Image (cartoon, rainbow, N blue to C red; front, side, top):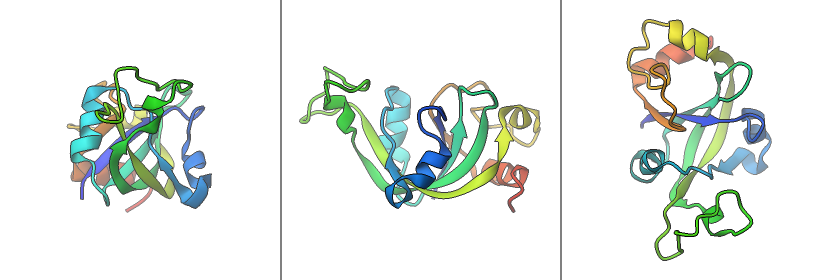
Length: 153
């Protein structure tokens, strides 16, 4: 099992939206960065744990946990002319973009970006280093530190 951090803007899709989704699951669409796409396609696996991180908001923070329940598959929005995620260079024979399906696990007491940056135990976390990527791997010891910061053990 691997650990990940998935960023989302809560105005677009929040941890509450995931919890309230049918079967508490959603297809994580709209990834349009090649490195993030490669993580989804090649490394994110069923059973992996995911921190949901609210970004581009008043208080950016890790706010919950989800589990990957379905492996990467083509993002259907890339083929939809009316979608913001449409990609004219993508085809059903050669899709460029993928997504995974996540299932809600739990809310966490928010662990703010400010608290993450202040924690000296988090040395490898890309988010702390100014990582702008929407999908980031997390090493297991740092996953545990963030859980402890949220009041979980």
